[in-house]
Length: 283
Image (cartoon, rainbow, N blue to C red):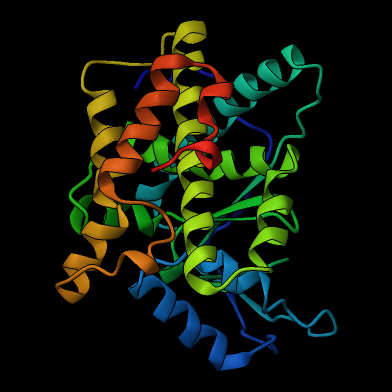
């Protein structure tokens, strides 16, 4: 991906090297256990975090730590990707007569406190609609490369674009509609609704790639394959088969590898946000 001469975002909050004290969290250790169970079954941990907010009266203690020097270049790359999503969505919202409110992106080490609750790095990247921020511990990218066998800078960019896709859903009112509808459903139906929401975020990430490349020629040979490989690597079916040896479709929350690849490619090839209505799709 071509990025070295590109604009850096001013919306990055760098909290790396700050060790968070756990303080008093709604749900306590039970929340952490639920998050770990959610990870095991492929559930989006932000759903649990939103239901277990930090006690506003709690003072969280911090202790500065050394920042790994080898992460600085990756942090810079993420700032460029975030800036590019800003440029893309500002323009797309303008065309639709809307105003795009840029999200913040928080880099953290080990653990972090968000408006959706306290999170450990094990939950992976997540978007919190309560504060409209994306959170990521850069160690996730080592896991993406080593555990999920999805290396490459555009695979990393896809992850950020997916989380920004959830921010787009928040601004368009989609996230609230999904949450309200999910509250009236049983777990299996709620999971299927979550899958549609996640696949739409994949499609939105493809929309970004399409318009960013047309406007700024960011793509290089092999980039699309990197993103498709990453989308496939983190499909619910593939993750469940790897962790427990079998799949349970009713517990899927993000979609199968095939579905995630399909919707990212659909956004990439069409560049049309109207092609991302996963909620109207039969499968």
